[in-house]
Image (cartoon, rainbow, N blue to C red):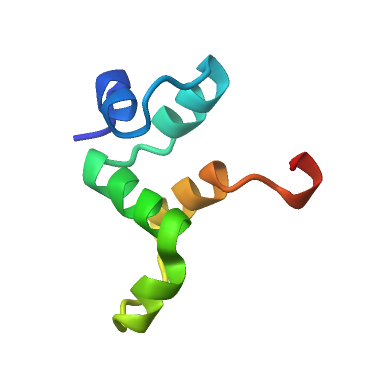
Length: 72
């Protein structure tokens, strides 16, 4: 089942409406969002564990959650 606003808030805390809409539009699940957060916060450790690079919805979530260099 896809993400709900309550899932996003539980995982990320309060987010703005634009980010909420982008995350909901991916059709991802709460577990995929949690995995994306893990990759955003600690990709070197996950690669070190031998995990495959994210693909599909997890990769799309990472793109949404990772600010562009221009936006920093």
